[in-house]
Amino acid sequence: MMRTIKTTCCLLVLCLLVGCAGSQGSAYEKDLLVVGFSQLGSESDWRIANTQSMTQAFSEENGYELLFDNAKQKQENQLIAVRNFILQGVDIIVLAPDAETGWDNVLSEAKAAGIPVIIVDREVSVEDESLYLSSVGSDFLKEGRLAVDWLEKELARQGRNDEEIKILHIKGTDGATAQLMRTKAIEDGVLRQSLWTISAQLSGDFTEAKGYEVVRDYLKNDQDIDVIYSENDNMTFGAMRALDEAGLSYGENGDVIIISFDAVREALEYCLEGKINLCVECNPLHGPRVDELIRQYESGAEIPKQTYVEETYFTRSNLSLEIICNREY
Ligand code: GZL
Image (tube, rainbow, N blue to C red; front, side):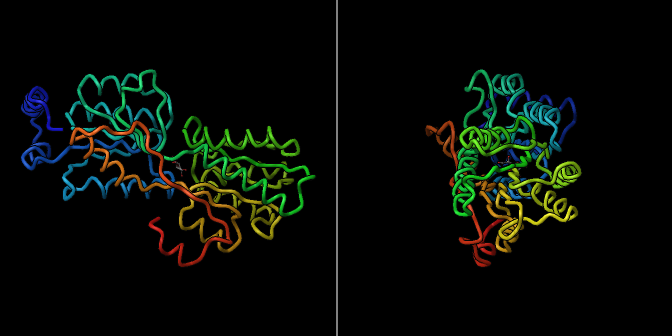
């Protein structure tokens, strides 16, 4: 979508006022699409892979000039970044939102400025869904339900259907779609399985450090755990360190079953070693899909409001070193 004459004039005035040589001129001369991408942080291996996928897609060779901002997992930083993108008159804004709520005002400002917004990864919860063009991400509830179904089958395979099962639940960033939906899945599972109990719900904020901290502190008071349901791999890595320090065994031949989400390479390696029982894939490679959506939009084609990516799961039985080596993240 070429900049409107009005926006271009405003931009030229803005450049005269603040003396910004800026790269828009070069972008404008080369007819590049200027994309403002607000990434929520760099908290996990998944996030790093997502950023790489997005920045590769928005390259100059692909016809883009990318303005990138890393919000360090703080929504207030994302609000500032989006407002800066609006001020700079970008052609399109891509937002990877930290939490679901709090976006109505800033997305209304983008709409008023005539700048379309594409949501990537987690979702936004807004009164008016016309505030964003499209959303690309994962069906996190489906991921969680896949994990719970697997756990039911695994416990049956182990002959433990009549056993009390105590689950330690490590939650991701509160209010993030990935946290809300993966949490809903395990909570629904516990409602269905009368012998399952969630011993505690610890918030690990999707980071390895926090995952280690909260599990280490929890194990000081209770080590009677049958399952760890961890909402991302980095928190799982921290939990594994805490289990090691407490002398608790885990994985295929251990006392604690470990379920983890993302399926980044390091987690798959642990899975192949039998240290993580189940890795549920969460695909971070959204760059090509968002690039395609933007091109469809530019060509005037109808674009879907929501695109879910295909995902699977891994256990030791369907993994190999070759599969792991051939994966992109
Ligand atoms: C999921 C994404 C989550 C990952 C975490 O799409 O939002 O955030 O599961 C990441 O690794 O921090």
